[in-house]
Length: 369
Ligand SMILES: Cc1cc2nc3c(=O)[nH]c(=O)nc-3n(C[C@H](O)[C@H](O)[C@H](O)COP(=O)(O)O)c2cc1C
Image (cartoon, rainbow, N blue to C red; front, top):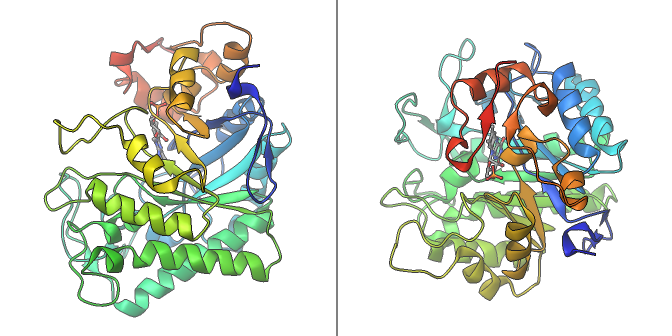
């Protein structure tokens, strides 16, 4: 059988029935109280029927973490019924359920609610029109945010998730601390690369300690990262190798890359043709699994990605248009690159797709619902 459809076992014993993962994808479709909507439940349940592991979208860990409207949230106990519905919708189909824990920091949309306090490592505005200058967090507040992440992780456990993924990618708060662009701090959380990675690493260490205290060695703690930033100064591949080595030494359960294409090379240095995954393999040397992503949507790209050294592969856009992409591939059929009612995606994300399918260039099409 093709590797993609064989079982995978994490170091802690957790088994996946296949090696394909639903990439976390925000659908902007929670209920107005930020609980899971029925449409989202249907969306996740369909994908859980075929993926080995489902990573649910960026979930706000606190009031202050919320990045956009209608974002699913796990801010306190009151979100437990909503989050239990999400974990159940995934697990009842035999898929492993992971919740992505999110704090948006300086990328949060302004004017989401009254007295919103947009924070980051330093008072440096992101290079996006909608962003505002954030307030630099005090040292003690950084520890409070670590506690918010831990609290959300504990709630995710209670809700029935098999694990969490710390969202350290796509320019959000954890990345903002790692980045020399957004982090100009002079306390223990800023300065050298070792100090800039202190927030992510401290979070992972404390999360693992909490897991031990709660006697939940089966619970997965993963970390997602973006390997480079285009800003100058910005995260370089060299910086990322330091972070990857530290996460590996810390025995993180997996590292999930965030890449536009699974086999991409440096964005900053066009001359350098060595792929990002080759750099990471050189450092990690199979000590922890790496999840690849980015335009993996047919057997050729799947085979090629496994050959380049990824342990697991996550799929985004193709799994939005075709909820049963894994079954289709396994049956030797072509995945559906057309958005329609059969895609079983919530209305708000469908509306956004109608305004311009992000993957248009990749051959995705859409019909009016
Ligand atoms: C609509 C949409 C929402 C996304 N939301 C998230 C998210 O919540 N968290 C995250 O880490 N990445 C998010 N991503 C990025 C995907 O996880 C993935 O990395 C990206 O789509 C590339 O994979 P693909 O080429 O298979 O689509 C999102 C992507 C899309 C298209």
